[in-house]
Image (cartoon, rainbow over all chains, first blue to last red):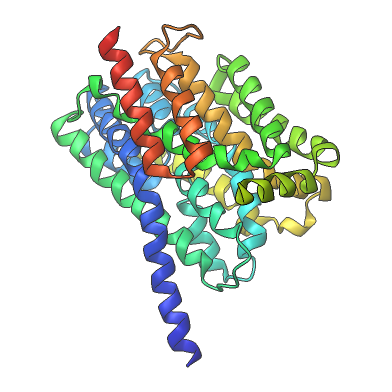
Length: 248
Length: 106
């Protein structure tokens, strides 16, 4: 009885994770194609461009890495910069950890390999609810697999055919729009709004800082703002607002 | 070959960062205030990414905060829809429609 229900819930969690990731893929697909096309333009071999998407699996660091390779920068510097660019992934790692620490190391390693902005945004939401599913990591995994497959396939298309979607469609803007759809409802909890406002301000001011360090600083500032405002704006105020919303 | 080594190095760096707290360091050893603040990673980082992509536009990524910024109009419309509807597809649809309309009108 037990194994059967677990199996069912794994499968449905996985499928639900894939489905939740689909809206993000709309914005990720042109990004993947753009990377493939850009890497070829910069003189990388098709195998190396593809290898980068599989091995590094991080859009921003792949673009920066490609640019630096083409400019003939030192290898160690490229590695260091690609790490700096994705420093915020450490925060994702820490934020996901308490929810998955009952899982074996091979599972946590697998989730770490595919831990990106797009997978984190969808995956972490699954842990907000109180429902007792023991297979929520399959939801995260489903979202990650959908993203990884899309990233590899669209990189390949970009390598072979160039950026197949016209720039004028602005399809890449679907990605921030999906983030808006995910984050704005969170703002009903007012400390989360404070976190977003402060992080947004720091990110905009620090946009020109080197290697996206502004984004990492923004994340830390936002976290501090959320924590600091919670006693004031509090969980109870947020819950009250929620009840009013539901009653309305 | 050398370029492959660089890519492997990038992959190792990226993987190490992502594994840091999931595999190498147990989260219970982190300072408790930091662990508490992790609840705000999602709203903080997502808002940061959204706003930089809205306010820095074009191939030259110039700062644009005025009425001429089509992405700003689209993002505001999308935020309103997200707040009211909680619906991802509707949010994307309205946001893209406003963006296209603004681009067409300009």
